[in-house]
Image 1 (spheres, rainbow, N blue to C red):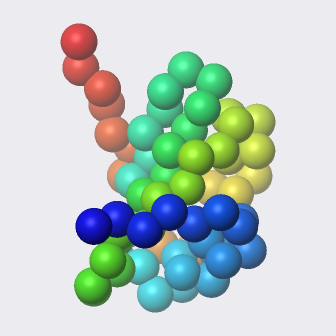
Image 2 (cartoon, rainbow, N blue to C red):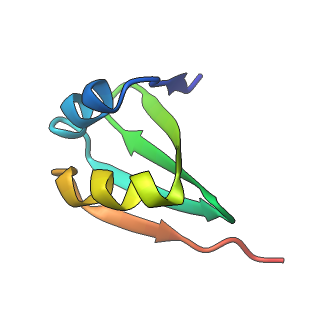
Length: 68
């Protein structure tokens, strides 16, 4: 089961030990997913706030394309 992070500071701390960060853009909301060894952590942010959080993340970024 994925765990949702509600604090940006906690999410950035988890990113230091994550293998990768997947970025899913859903209109004006961006969902960030951190994959660690044991768990998947997610956070939903507004698009404006997500860009500055992405610049601070310390793991490899993977953009996920949503197909329709």
